[in-house]
Image (cartoon, rainbow, N blue to C red; front, top):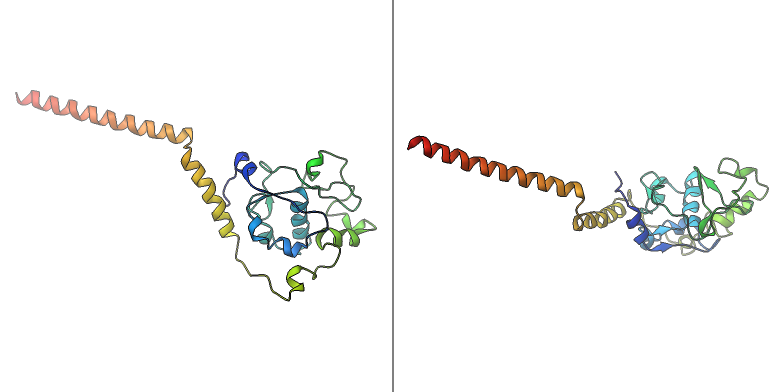
Length: 209
């Protein structure tokens, strides 16, 4: 199970954004230093689109452990729509699973296209190449240009563990009220047992005399 992330913890994350058509999706998922950052609507939208088209897997998208939980599910309770917007083929912010990815520009008229209908756009292929492949193609990543193979990784355990560790240390330094109540209850119980033991001992001595 992925660790919970509070709004405060999410807001403390470093912000990661990219310029439109500047990063290839296959390079984006291998930016190791950014996996625990909160992401812009453009970055998040790119990852979700790539998952939908099966260009990357849900596991790979979930390496970005701040915006996503396991299975590339958006952390809707903490996610912030900021940075560059994720625009559809018609140049308007796309709506994905009920979330309008308008970025820092604020609410705007949503795109008439969705992931289900985007192929109907006359400029679909051009838009896709610009959005995911920086205007080239699916095989033209920096890794491919260098003739290298991206390192294989297992499920984002290390990313999630690192995030969980941060959250855990924060929780340890600031115990919840429920933990405080539990400690108070245990302390009262111990005092009660101690007091009862003294009374029983006193009664025993009284009987002997």
